[in-house]
Length: 197
Length: 423
Image (cartoon, rainbow over all chains, first blue to last red; front, side):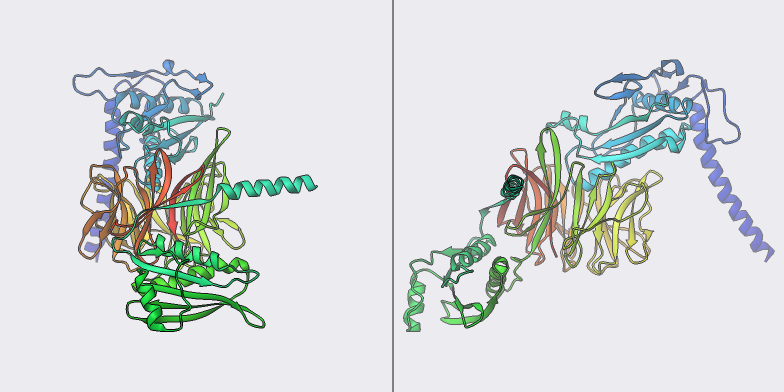
């Protein structure tokens, strides 16, 4: 009886340890990737609050890229509305992972901005190229947008300031049928619903 | 007032003229059966010419029949041997002899189908005619009877299709959800929107259509009753949901929605107004399609890295992967006998329609486009309807499941897409 109880406790402990391990492992990864980040919110290890420059993880032989809070400025143009400079992230065919440092920098820029402007909110719009089924492409666009959202949440952005929507293959950026056109269509666009100003 | 009425009349005339579906038969069955349709007699309301042309169009369009000119054929010769000899000489294997007549009260169409080679009558019927509006329906019923009697295959001439069209008006796109007879007539836009419409699907009784509308700036599922035009949002709240599929008993709708960044399949009980999650995997699970038993669901998942078709019980258990060939298999539709899947397949040469046999796990490509999508089986499982592109314009294609018969369906001035055949 007691043995069973202990077994159960031990089992639960293991789950807790496993969960915590994953959590701290994720934190560790983020911490490694942010060596200059010196202000950590100790209460909730999932949330990293910083006003210092954020560094992206450096690949071997690559120079670290720096996203500093000072470099984040609201741009306005008629076509795109308000952006923080580049607001489009492109994807490989049938893929939704973010690999390039420049794309990670876009995510970081928006993350920092949203954390510093609590009333600001964004809409992450996912798109796919025209090939394949429309319903699958709608899901693919949503998955791409959700991926960006998840990365922002890891960066400490509040879930309430991010909305995700997919248009699938409906709103093409380029109407051609070449691979170049397709690659311009496989994208996520970040749009301000409220700039917080 | 009169001006307004005239204006309205013009508008309705123009819009109905616009939404006419044009059907072009490209390939017909080799060895199509020669048949003569001979209908005599007219009444005040009904014309034998209309009946003839509807039935001829149905049978020719099926690809199984070759229509011979009936105008020079005598059908009133008393001597049966002479009569059959004359018809044989005209090259006919079959002949429909029909007449429209009126007794004291009602109008009727009476018809006999003759087997010219065997020299006998295969069937005779009499149908009472009521309203002019029922003319096409009665003619399609006659086509079904002829088709079933001769080929042994269930006729689908009285079935319908639903599809989405888009039209560019002053730099704005107008989306329309249409319902039309399978021969392209009676095309009606049952819903119009300036926001995207997609994924129409028929209820099992063909009385309602579920579809996705972006009217609230996100994909949401709506159900529209055809008889009343009444529309209802399926799920409360502000979540995106898509890819609706009606269960065979009409009590549930399967759909896709995201959970913690992953797209999962749910089923919603219309009676209990409750949803239940069916899949749980990292990545994309979407495009649910019910197995005819109502106990399992086919769906598209990229859990193996690329989109493939899976099958899973709605109660529990692991999903079973079905497709292994090609780099892309998605948007599956199952035949009513549960033996075949039609799907979008890419084997390295563009997105084409393929049929997958669930019995021997064999996949066969049946279309030749590069951007073919949205396949659905005819209720008799003999034809497949899908969307294709022609000179950058969206068209619909109906093809026999061996690919030998092919029909193109175009809507003048509009792009058409996402067709789905009624049950």
